[in-house]
Image (tube, rainbow, N blue to C red; front, side, top):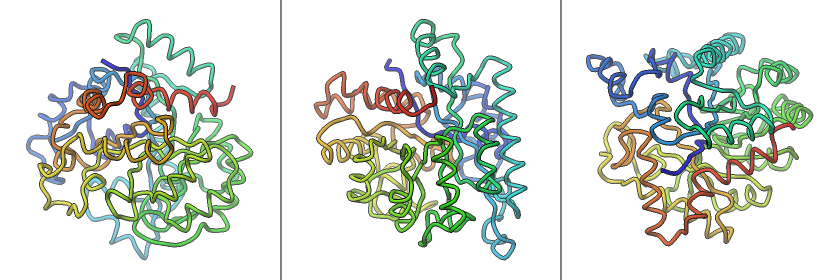
Length: 364
């Protein structure tokens, strides 16, 4: 089994927004939801902490996810669970919700289930410990924020940095205080540009995932710090605004970024319709098409990794055939080898590229 670093998991939102005990064995967690019908993903989860360990996941970027939506658009975004536990009427509400998610991570730390990674030294120490004893070492996590709504003002970023936040993107879906995200188009706001300057000062990593095209190019020009894309696939293979064009991928690569490819089936199959398309139309091996596309653009394997986004608002009803639990990511080993990728290249995709990136960009 290869050691894996996952660039994007919504662990706290998965636990609190869906009211799940992610410390349980995955099958038991799903059994507890057998009679729930509020969302198609009920009883179809792929991710729990024991399953992460079973899948060799040594480190992940674990998110804080809470959005602020204007009252005028509340009805659009708050139609039943889990959205009712994702969207808040004010940034203060979103910020408090994110603090609650952080408190959840801290409680898991007290049980030696998670271990925070905030510095290069902590990363190296965790990597050595995991290599020596993967069965009992807590899973390491780098604290990330998906959408910056919990940062109430640009100067509030300092407080989040002090709490351990090391990576953030500006928007999730639709327009936010700082930028425009998936599903709409528009530029960064003046507050968003100020937030980027604050990120530069702090050393925060900018995640450009979910940005509109206009916002993406603006952010690349305006921000001189480290950039990654935690969970993004290729527009050349699956045409949609949510994916990156080759031009965007090349700009990321030129800046030394790493792109984590994602396992949401609508990002892997052209024309996917949520709630209608069967997962049988796309296999797990299709992810290798996106990995290979990025490698061919740059001519090496240094800029692509895994950012699974598993259980990020969906379950196996929206994962590719062949992926029923996060430990199934290990099947990518054989899929990559079948495409001619040697061992060292597979290791780069599984963990080496994220490891190098965070060693370069976490504070000393």
